[in-house]
Length: 127
View 1 (cartoon, rainbow, N blue to C red):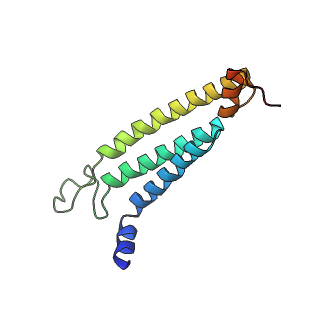
View 2: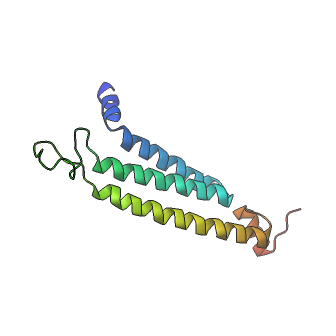
């Protein structure tokens, strides 16, 4: 048990990313409100960003551009950070588009509940 706890403490960003991803996927799967589903998807995206940034980071690493003369110390990989910056920009635009769609659906159906929208579309009226 002590060994497992030590591994979790050393790899805490990965552990946090797994927990965040589980929370986000549980939110998406258990909620029928479209806003809550979108928040769950954003939590899952944040977990993925955290996982990639943690994979490119090193505890004793240095920035490769600023420390070119110090070849004995390992460098931090800048590629995951650059990729995740692009991913953040894409996720913000997709979130804005999804919010616009949810607003449009609300204007048409009068609700943001996916189950209620399905009932309205199928002609089942719950009083």
